[in-house]
Image 1: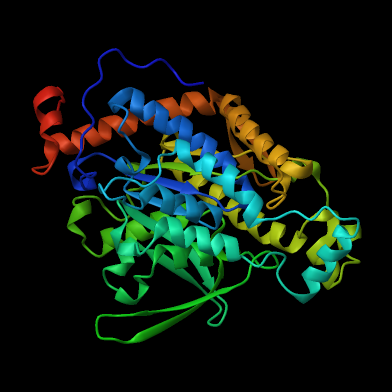
Image 2: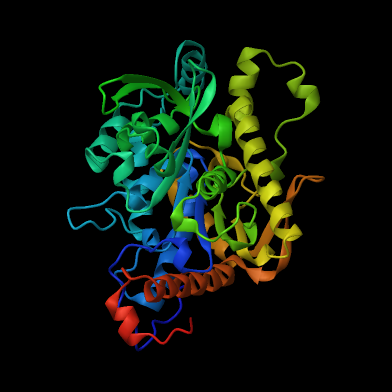
Length: 420
C-alpha cells in the first residue's frame, strides 16, 4: 500500500511541532483499547508514518505532527511508545516498530494454556482472580519507558484510567499536569493502569508526590470502562485550554471545532458475529457475564458502547459543521473467531491481526450507524487513500507552523515556498 518515495524530499524539520496559533488546524490522534488487537492500529500507524516519511524524509515520526495523541488501554501503551523520548530526544519507537513489539511480547503478556483442562482453569481464574498476573507486562513496560514522566512526552498526550476507590475517571493529560503536578506520574505506571482490564489483569496501585511533598494515591483500572475511544476526551482537553486562555491556541474560539483534524483508530470488534442475544443473556449470572461466548461479555459491552458513542458524537459534530473530511475513523466491525479476542496471543492469531489491519487499509471509509449498529461506507474513499490525504494535510500544517513561528525550522523557512 505504500506509495513510491518522492525523488526530491525536503529535509525533515527537526524542531518540535509549533503551537496551533501559528497554523490553521489542531491535530489529534486517538487510539482505542483492545488488548492484542492493538496490532490493527499499529499497522495503520505504520502506513501513516511511511506516508509522512515520503513527504518529509525518513526521520519523520508520528509525534512530529500531532498536537495531542490520546490512547486507552492498549492504545495508551501505543501512545507512550510514540511519544517517549530516547537519548536523542526523538521518539523511542517508530510506528513500524509497534507491531514488532506486540508480536514479540504479547505471547508472554497473555500466556496461553494448552492442557486438556484449559477451559475449566479459565473459569476458575475468572472466579478467583484476574486471568493473567500482569508481571511480564509490568516488567517490559518499566524496562522500555524507564523513568519518563507524563510531563516529558514529546507531544501532548491524554490517557484515561478509572480510579476504583474514588469511582471516577482519572485522566492523565499533559495539559492538566501543568496545573495539577500530582498527575505527573511515571508513564510506566500510567500504561500499566490504563491496561488493567477487569477480569484480565490486576488493578494497579501507585502514588505520586507534588512539589510540596504531598502524597496522592491512585487505585486504577483500565480506562476503557470510561472511554475506550478517547477522541472526545482529547478534544475536551484542548477545549479546556482554549477556554483557559492558553496562548498556544490564540485566536481559536472554544467552539471552533472546524479547526480540528482528527484521526481515530479502532481495534476492531465482533459486531457482525452477533454472538450474544437477549434470551441467552437473560439467564446469565456472574459467570455468564464473565465467561459466555468464550470471552467476557460484560467487558465487551462497556468498551464497545463507549467507543461507538464517541464515534457517533464526533461524526454528528463534524457533519453539522460541514467539515466531515476533517474526521477519519478507521474501524472494522466484522471480526469473528479468534481475531476478535483481546488475549488469544498465539503466533498465528497475532499474524492474522496484522493481516486484518492491512485489509482494513483497502476498505472504504465508514461511519457507525447507531440505528443498526453497523459500520457503513460513507464514501468511495479507501482508508489508505484517506490516510494519504491526511498525511499531506499534516505535513503542510507542520511546514506552515514552522514558517510562521520564530522558533520554526530554518530549513523550512529557507527552502519551502509557503504562502502565508
